Each structure stands twice: as C-alpha cells, then as structure tokens.
Image (cartoon, rainbow, N blue to C red; front, side):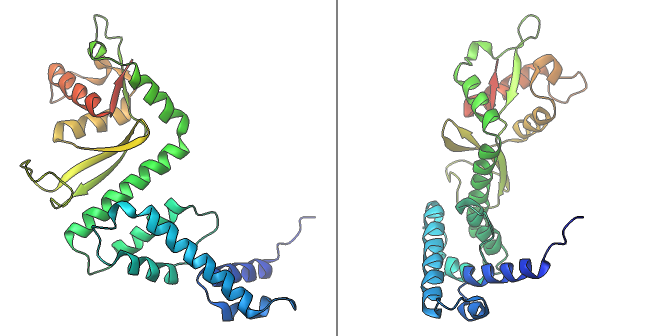
Length: 252
C-alpha cells in the first residue's frame, strides 16, 4: 500500500523555510525546540539575509553604477521575496531583475541595463545546462579558419551556430556606441566567446541568418540557402563570415 504524504508537515516546513528566508522570526516560535531561543533564530536569519544581500551585490556589480539606489532595491527585494530551495546566486539575481523590471519608476535607460544583465544571466544558465555543446562549439571555432568559410566545390563545409545565445532589445543609447548612427530599437545578441560573454548588434540580415541557422544548423551552405530566399548565396556567405568574426558561427 502506498503511503499517504503528510501534507501538513510539508506545509509547516514550507512556512518555516519562508519565514527564515525573510527574517520573520516571530512566525518560527511554534517550531522551536526547548533548547532553542528566539535570539539564536534571529541571528541565523539575519546572517542569511546579510549573506544573500552580499551575494546579490557581487553578482550585479557590473550594473551597480548604472542603476541608482541598487543597494536599496536589493534590500527591499530580499525582504519581500523569499529565497527558494536550491536557488543559486545567478537565479536569485535574475529573479531580482525580473522583480525590479516590474517597478513603474524605471527609465528607458534602466530597462536597457536590466535587459542586458538578464541576457547575460541567460547565457550563463544555458552554458551550465548544455556544457558539452558549449565546449564542442568553442573547440570547433578555435580550429576554424577563414579559408574554410565557403561552401567548397561540393558544398561539404558545415555551418555551426553557437548553441549558447540570448537576445535583448535596446531602446536607448545607454549601452551603445554614441558614435555609430543607429535606428532604435536594436536587437543585441549575447553569447560566450571562450570563457567570456560577448555581445553584438545584429542587423536585419544577420538576425535572419541566425534565425534560419537556429532551425537548420549544422548544415552546408547549399542546405542553408534555398533559391526562394530573399538574399543570394554570395551575400549569405558575407553575412556568415561576419557572424563568424564575432563568435556566433563556426565552420567545420
């Protein structure tokens, strides 16, 4: 006979965990043993809260100078949103940015900064979850030279798309080069290059190529380009070479 789960115990444990995560010491009183004191629980909860705040400040260091009152926002978030089981710092940081993105007093520049950091977190998450594909692509790219960036006489060269990538749309020039004339908004791709996260502005033809590669790669140029496509094969080779130069495409 299957045992019946003790939902009451699960509910009590969940309530206790949430209370400790946000420092509501008073609600833990019914759970204390005879040897425990409220002061000990408070010290434990305060220590966890301070550690969580420090972790978030460190994780968001790259955008600290671009978001006013970031430290205050982090403290407000920690007090309002409990840390869930098995969360790492990146997951908590992404949840904080999602929470912050819901605030009504953000400027368009603030929203671009948040979108940028969330895209970087997404790259980190994908690389951890799909490490073998990430390593394989980086190895392939390291031995892929420009001489290979053509279909060859029999169209045998394979085109590979970086499997780890995320995208954000920037609506301001806050994170962009002011010297380059741009028509906003612009799509920006984020991806690993070696052990670092890089980004690249994608024009319409580049974005279209990445979209098609996401459906067909790895494939030869002959398989990628079809007679009915708007861009000709020569132009497609140029676009692919540009994508390879920044680290989104490799050949092999």
